[in-house]
Length: 109
Image 1: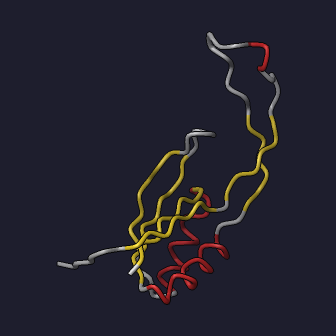
Image 2 (image 1 turned 30 degrees about the horizontal axis):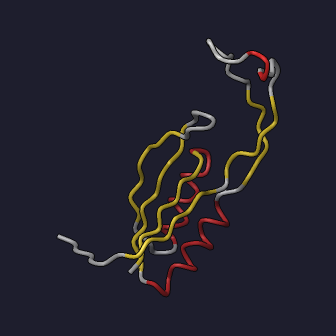
């Protein structure tokens, strides 16, 4: 048994949730916030058998895409102004960060 933890951008969460249901995978969704962009994310917890992990990863890969986004920089309040860039920067966002963890025991009550 494995626990797949997938952190995805909010824009991808509905498509991923629907695709997981269609693939007959049960998941728990939690709202989360990223540390870099301070933007909303969704964290999925998906428990599955070892032989189905690749199927889950394929669903995540197919539904969570990278995209470019302009991000306004945060002003350096009391920080070093030498490295401050006063104009928006183009960064890659989206996709998914995925962890696959072993499960020693699983119970459903």
